[in-house]
Image 1 (tube, each protein chain N blue to C red):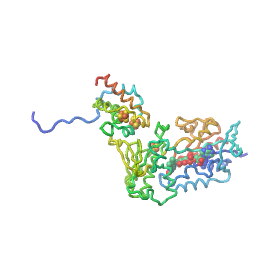
Image 2: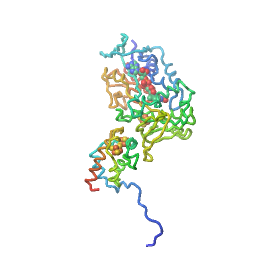
Image 3: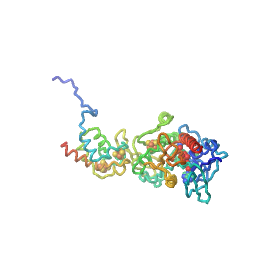
Image 4: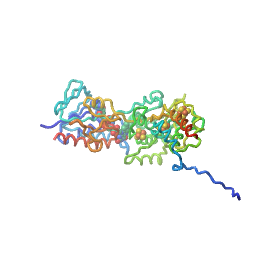
Length: 111
Length: 338
Ligand SMILES: Cc1cc2nc3c(=O)[nH]c(=O)nc-3n(C[C@H](O)[C@H](O)[C@H](O)COP(=O)(O)OP(=O)(O)OC[C@H]3O[C@@H](n4cnc5c(N)ncnc54)[C@H](O)[C@@H]3O)c2cc1C
Ligand code: SF4
Ligand code: SF4
Ligand code: SF4
């Protein structure tokens, strides 16, 4: 095929309808407090991992709610399970257990 | 014989209820625990949304303190009894007052910022509350807030003690967003070269003129808004403060040095209100503010015949709404006493 110097770029939109949200449902059942998040960012601000890598705990759990699971496995390996994020959360979200339930969910779904 | 009402609390709500009831021919006893009337209004310098002097509103309320109102200042209530149709209130000085109706207008308290230890209030020098800033404005009208400080960067922190399970208050205090924007503008007027940042989660500019104040803050005064809740503040050796938030709109953790931190403290139900409510058996909501008989339709009476509520005992509200509410209470009381 003749090359015109262009290629097809990957769609960056969250395709909400195409995304499989079974993992989301599973995680929300194990740790329902995640539904209380109001996106304030306190968790990310306090997370040492997020200061030194591109890990962002708030983004992770928001992306899960949208069914975006790409890179999830690699990302959550960065968490040290220190629990600082949970200490500052004004909505009492159990973020440490969230990370653990993501591990369980990914194992179960073979992702 | 003329009917009587006792009003407990001589703030905005109590004063306006008293004034309207007296106008309607009811004999009123107004009980205030402080040596003066006015409640929180007396602490504010200029009021949102139009930044008029708060003394003007107090003067209006004071004009209503006419014949037919007996004032009891410095009065501590030790006991309230209801027998048949009458209320008897015992004051600490031994006095007893009787009435046919009772209005609870004991207001609110501001959140004690020391409870958010990670924000450093009471620990670091340059962390103050919005209440202290009003005090400053009232007493030092022309003075520079940060005399001698070179960089003059100020952080204003929203939701201190509100919307926070850790502080035990899930509700929104409604008026601290607009107070923060008002104060940011006032600081800029005093110190045009100051850099001001508001750290917020949501800007709740719900009432008339509020959104326009937000617009003015950006357009005319260059105030900047960063969407992220303060996670912690720590003091540097030079007594400046390092604040840490997530800048949620870029998705990155952000740290910033500021010279002064202003905490927008919210409303909390006052312990005094709760003490009186317990004596009377009044109902509290999950937020610990008092509940009227019906949240939509019977907003000024309670389930106890003859007991009425006015103002911020029912939750956060501004002056205009408090005055409107007090008038509604007066009408309900007058109807009851017919
Ligand atoms: C930082 C801040 C800034 C604000 N700025 C503005 C503004 O610019 N514009 C605006 O519209 N609103 C403003 N408000 C809101 C305003 O303060 C309230 O709307 C108003 O004070 C409510 O009046 P109130 O009478 O219900 O309560 P209060 O003002 O709290 O009055 C209650 C009164 O009851 C008395 N009392 C309490 N317990 C007893 C007892 N047991 N016996 C006898 N007396 C008792 C108290 O001493 C007090 O005098 C602000 C609020 C805050 C926190
Ligand atoms: S538990 Fe994980 S996400 Fe939370 S602060 Fe510690 S490292 Fe960050
Ligand atoms: S601290 Fe809690 S409420 Fe805030 S973004 Fe994190 S999980 Fe959500
Ligand atoms: S009014 Fe604004 S600052 Fe106050 S509690 Fe509500 S959102 Fe927070």
